Amino acid sequence: MTQLARRTNSHQQGKSSDKQLRIFNSLTKRKEQFVPLESGKVRMYTCGLTVNYLMHIGHARTYIFWDIVERFLRYLNYEVSHVSNVTDISVDDNILKRVSTNDQTFQQLVTRYTQDYYHDRHLLGIADPYTYAIATQHIQEMIELIQRLLDRGFAYEADDGVYFRIDVFPKYGQLSGIDPNTLQAGAGGRIDKDEYDKETVGDFVLWKRTKPSEPFWYSPWGPGRPGWHIECSAMSAKYLGQTIDVSGGGEDNIFPHHENSIAQSEAANGTPYVRYWMHVRHLQLDGEKMSKSTGNFLTVRETLNQYSAATLRLFLLSTHYRKPLRFKDTTIHRSQRRIDRLRQVLSRLQAINEGKAKPSHAEKQILSSLQEAKQSFESALLDDFNTGRAINHLFRFVNLVHSFLDTRNNIANNTVRDLLTFFESVGSVLFGDLYTREIDVKPDPVVSRLVGLLLQEREQYRHQHQYQQADRIRTVLSELGFEITDTKSGIRWWIKSKA
Ligand SMILES: [Zn+2]
Image (cartoon, rainbow, N blue to C red; front, top):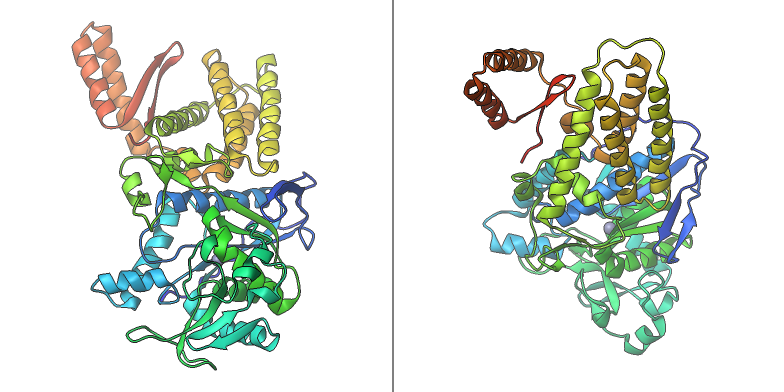
């Protein structure tokens, strides 16, 4: 079984920025100024994968979004404690279904997909949270929480398990908009499933008594397993306290999962559970919601056979998280072209070795545009993490720097450094770990020398009017993934993104 992984944030600790972040709170349905419970610190809990299969790109949209939230909060100098759960083995109905149709034990299936989940997150440049909270390692905390709900009269024991009594929690429905009065009229029904829709709402299960061939844990109510919702209430309280600043997941987590999490936590503790809820809209494939349960999905791995991780990441961030997004090749190609433009501008800047000491007038202008780009990038993300707008600002500036470089050969070192620092700082927020892995990639020195030699050869052929041979060198380099451009100031080359 995977060990609980802990990582201390390496980000700069200190005072949070005075820049005002606004978040659309799914609970109040309006944009609010973000003020954490404790100044300069953010407690964040996000719902991770149910490890019964590989991550699909709809999940990726959500996890990449949370990665941006975490990185941007750090960019603003907040100290972030991010806990994300892994719903593993038998606590989830879906895992049981998959085990029964596959020739694997629970342990084998869950261990494999948990490792795959971590691996796929890394492929997408997503940082590990401060803690991965593994559900099955917290059964005791869940039992204690259920006991507290029983003691306080919010839960009851039935033949097949323990249930939360929704009619004694008047705030039930506050997140999803379900009317508690309607509920009371239809109450009495109990739901023993982890996932259900609003039409079948009723008292929901906290502990399920074991059925034949199912794995189980001992509890005061007999052997069984916890319902899905209780894990997030129990684990967030353990690592982050009873009230947390930020939480959320995909939009389908709103009901019943987050509605039930609020009920469990607030009924047990008597304190507010989450101060800012955020939910990411679905990714659509062929006009329909991408979903594991309907089979309409593409895994991250399948998609990365065709596109680079940076391209996929940029595409998923190109639309604001609260707007629906369609997985479309044409839009993805646009992201791919943008990444090429960014990589080109970085390699052009890095190729400038000797700059004069003082910046020219044109350089001062580009530096002032840099300040504007930085400000626009920040304001876009401060406005409820509007990544689409932030990306547009960034790439407008990339184009501006290209035009600036087209007319100049000699640039002050400080200007180059300021431009590279800016790209690195915003690039690391947007692309996460992919910035150094896929964007700001410095070619191997041996590769650089070999390409240089081949280009010299090509120049000689051209000089001797042997254009066929010259073109052959270019074609070979292109097939190997090198893009060659002839400019007034000489030949430029870079390694292209994956097609
Ligand atoms: Zn959860």
